[in-house]
Each structure stands twice: as C-alpha cells, then as structure tokens.
Image 1 (cartoon, rainbow, N blue to C red):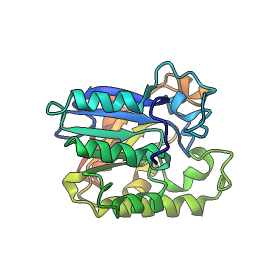
Image 2 (cartoon, helix red, strand yellow):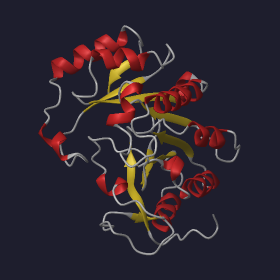
Image 3 (cartoon, rainbow, N blue to C red):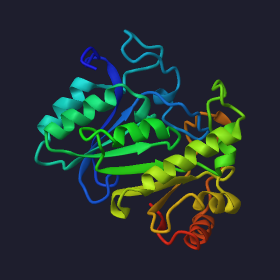
Length: 258
C-alpha cells in the first residue's frame, strides 16, 4: 500500500454533496475499476479500460480524474466543514487505494460511507472485520433480479458469465452482510432501468432485503450509457416510477424515490 503512487489519476472527486451520505455534508470520490458491466452505467471512464492502477499512463481520458494527492488536499482543506467521505466507484472493494483513503480520512476526523455493487462478499467481510477500515455507513446496489446478473450485468469476459448460481449466491450474501448493520447505517439502491427493473424484478430483489431496509430508487438516465443501445431507452414516466415504488413498499416500507 505504501508503494501506491499518489500523483496519478485515480478517480472522480465531488467536492461537496448533501445527498450521497444521509444526514451528513460530505465529499465523494469515485474510484476506477469495476467487475460489472451494467449496460446503463454512465461512469464509462471509471469502468472501461481499467488496468493496473499503479501502472504509469492510461488508455482512457484522464482529464476529469483527480489524484489521491488532490483528494487528500481537499479533505485537509475542508476539515471541520465536511463531516463525511463517500468512497464509491466503479467498485471500491477492488481498488487498492480504498484502505489508504479510509485511513487518511479517519485521521482527519471524517465519517466513512462505502458504496458497493454488492457482488464481492469476501472483500466486503474482510473490510468490515478490520477495525481501522470498518465503514460508518454502507450502501449496496441491487441491480435487478439476482438470476439476471449472469447474462445482463456481469462483465462478459468474466469466467462466471452466464453462471446464475454464482451471482445469486454473491448478491444474497452481500445483502445479508449489509443487513447486519444497524438500520440507520445502511441502505440499498436500485436504478429504475425499464428493461431490468419491472414488477417481477422488484419482488425478487425485495426477497433479499430486511423489512426495515431503506430502499432508495433513482430514475434511469439514458445518456452516455455503457451499452449504447440503452441511450435510446426512455426512462419510466413519473407515474410509472411511482407505481413501481408503491409496489416495492408492499414488501419493504422504506422504499422511496431519491
């Protein structure tokens, strides 16, 4: 960890947010690298062409990416003003910078929120079992029915592409790990992507969640999608989204549109 370069593009820095860390004014850092290829993902430069982070150079446009040095400088400057730091991605559980960021932010007095895609239970458990790295808040994505991850969410180059049982087991285990957190220190998140989130999917996802879950839905943005065909898909109307969320509330009362 000590050998990781701090002066190379590592992620997207959002200097201030009042919505990403419930109840806290925070900064967010979106790290490069992800094991999924969600077709609707709009953080293309964080996902495409991910290589060894410590390697010099990059095949992707890094003009919008900040270094770890810049992140740390921002946290020091905003110390006493911001209360928390959100570590997101990509998938931060895959990124070697994540432990370094957590330790530095903690030294400066920040609370830590971790965003995860919910497919890496072993890595998540290892982080939670480390007293120095244990996040104060966890947000887990639920993309669609767990059985659909194998063919519609995972990276096609993954050795587990097409293997539904593998992904169902991983997502279920992550949901259980997050459920062990106090109810006010966790949330589950779903983007309302019309091809991926319909009533049957909501029912299947709800079966994984604790009854006291905060289940935060967001509208789909049909722009800059990883799979370009998704740019032509219209988001749900407000009425359609409201109907789906009302249906989700029949299973989890804390379902709402963020």
